[in-house]
Structure formats: C-alpha cells, structure tokens
Length: 322
Image 1: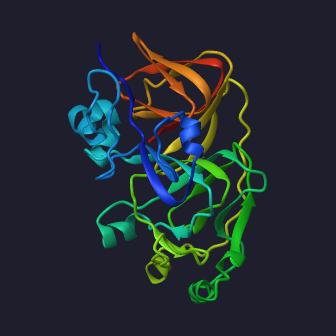
Image 2 (image 1 turned 90 degrees about the vertical axis):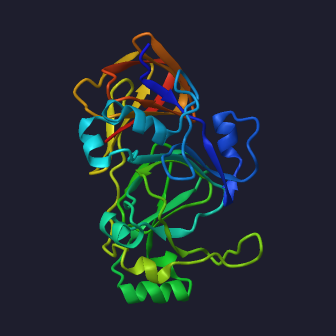
C-alpha cells in the first residue's frame, strides 16, 4: 500500500513561561513540567519531526522529503524549496506572557542568517477569560521612540492589545511586533524558521536570576512601524470550509464537522497539513486511515488525490497548504 498519511511524534519544549495545558490537551501521560511549545511538524535542524506510523515510521521529516520529493511536497513546492519542508506547526501554552518579539522577513533573514524569514499565524484554541495578545502598533511610532520606550519600559503602551476568545485568528507577517499573553493556548503555523528578536521581556529573569538577552538594535531594521488595523474574525459554519489566512507562504482554512466531508486535493499540487483542534476525526485515503484527535497533526502527501473526513460527534480542524 502506498503511504500518503503521516503522523509525527511531538517535540515538547520546556520554557520559562510554559505550563501544563499541552500535556492535558494532547493526552500525554509522560510530559515534563513547564512545556511551553509542542512542535508538531518541523524540519528545523536539531528539532526534526519523526514519523510514527506506517512503513516509514522512524524517518525524520527531512528524510521523508528527500525520499519522496515532489510526491510529498508538490511539484512547484519542490522546485521552490527543494528538500526543505517549508512550514513549522506548533501548539503554544502561555502560562505567563511571552516576550515581545519580532521576526525578520526573507531578505533580512537571508542576509543576516542565511535562512528564510518568519511570517506566521495564530489560531486561539482556548484561553482564560480576559486573555490578550499583542499584535503590532496602535499608533505611529518612530524607530527612535521604539528604542527609548524599550529603555524606559513603556513599549506595551503603544502596542495593540487584543482581548481574545477561542477561534480568533491573527496573521503576523514578518516585521510585526507581537506577544502571546498569559492564559492563551494557541496553534501557530509559520514559515520554517527559528529566528526571533526578543525586544521586551517585562523585566523578567531566567532560572539563574539573570535578565534574558534582548535584541533591541538587531530588531530595529526588522520592525514594521506602521499602525495595524483590527482583524476581521472569520465566521466558520458547520460542514463548510472557511478560509482563515491566505498569504504568500501558506493558506489556512477551518472545518467544523458534524458529518463526513470529502476533500478533493487532485488539483492542489501541495502537501496538506490537517490539525485537529477539538474533537476527533478519522482521516481516510483509499485503504489508508488515521484517527486524528484534538492536539494532533497529520501530513497528507501531495500525490494523494484527496481525503475523507469522518468526525466522531463533532470535530474542528485546520487545513494548511502552500
């Protein structure tokens, strides 16, 4: 049988601000304390996802790409990215506020780091009442004012603070200053890059009592200082796909399923990532099928013509492709 559906072992990352919600959400019995991130699908060197099912179990994602090439990525993606998997998917549990940070775009990242930039999106899976995110500037700020506000600890005053609820979506192109606030459980889809400039950390110290390194000057060239408009939050109807984000790097849609649905990928020419954010769903392609539960992610090869989604009583999924 030709394998087209791939599940992966999550990579759990302990952080200063991490909590315990990821372990409960993903039903993990042996997770350590303080897990801030679960990397679901990653080709980043040193943090490569490993296949857990089928005849290719044990292979890393880069090995899978090298072996399958365009059959996995799609012809155009393979011409563009070669053996590099272009996206990274995470779940993030913010027990405390994350640092305020920014990521470089492709040009700056290539010049400084020899890699791609980092545009990303957040989907709010769950949150405590009153939880907030920071996304961009709410008023005009110059590069000099930015630096002075970092120095006098008033930077958050000029950032756009958004109270959130489950299902909210934020697209953060490279250059947008941002932070995930305490109490948020977020699914993040991003370019495959791990370059972050930390510019403000609320005066925190690490486990040794030392302030964490900031990248105030490095970030100056990366930051987009324009005022950011409010997002138009999507409306997702039952059993109808809803587009959440269309960007140069990925397209993300949401499905809220109460009945089976056929997804035709025959004209897509791209891999598809399916992320279950609530409930559970059987994903089937021909004789092949995998049960996808909340907090888990599935990679569908580009050569797969489509899948059937069969929810348990109810399932909510994100669908991502390039």
